Image 1 (cartoon, protein in one colour):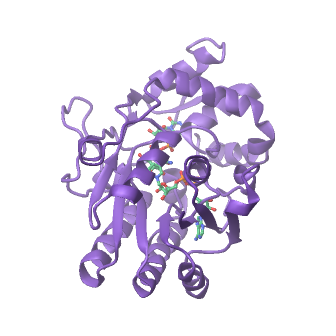
Image 2 (cartoon, protein in one colour; image 1 turned 45 degrees about the vertical axis):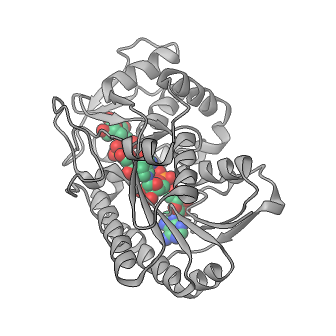
Length: 332
Ligand code: NAD
Ligand code: DAU
């Protein structure tokens, strides 16, 4: 039994990880989360209170972080500003949390000699052409496009430097696009599902040809636990489940699953600098650490996600109007 510190554990992927850990291990979890607009304490409702401690705080608060690191065995670092569109509107919080926050945690990991796992994204590699037969691997050079992805790339490089210069016991994972329960309505899939529930037409950026490599958040969680248990210090692992789909196909599938005509959506202003395609080759994680995804069927996973948003309107409704007003102000 370990005592794990999970930063950003009230966010989308962090909360899915906390649910996964409490279900599949005997570990105790301490969540450190600032509860920004993206964090929701309710995402952790119903979990066993004796195995979960919630700390409302900021990862840039060095004294707080230092106190928490003293009492844990390992740290899994999810906390971030995570949305590309927000980073185009106001990049500053991305620098504070993603760069200074990660630096603050690394310094505490160094002082306390703690095992540290850094959660990152495939967006650090930039994008691929639609007809490029290659996929991202651990050897792909960094080439981030947006303020968000450049701060994530910067945070990855800090982790690598703290491993090499100070011997911090860290690993890194770069995962593709996640879907599943507890994702904020600003993101593509929940935005379109909740639009349909509200009677609003889904909004597709540009022509909708952009490809994302979808993985269920629970498969991301099992991959992170595998790396925490078996990963080699200093190594980077790419996490993906062979889920490439273009946005147009995803919108049409959502409409179909929700009983609406396939063409009942609008094309809206494209995202500035919009990455064309992400694709992950997760051979290293699969062959060296023996991980496999379990949600092979995207359509079934998406149907379950639609059902979750139908059944949990009280979880997402408070954020919906504000998000749509923000997008409307940008023609999106
Ligand atoms: P999210 O925006 O849903 O959640 C982020 C969480 O971090 C929120 O609970 C927020 O309150 C918290 N947070 C933000 N700033 C903080 C701070 N300064 N101190 C403490 N807590 C803070 O994000 P997500 O989609 O769950 O992403 C989690 C991590 O996974 C991020 O590091 C992201 O880069 C990475 N990632 C996301 C995806 C994806 O598809 N969403 C894919 C690959 C990697
Ligand atoms: O690849 C991993 C990344 O995936 C993570 O690092 C990010 O934190 C996460 O937000 C996600 O980034 P994307 O920018 O790919 O996700 P988003 O949900 O914002 O958009 C997915 C695709 O859908 C993208 O091509 C933009 C498009 N889109 C998005 C919205 C919100 C639309 O067409 N319409 C929309 O309304």
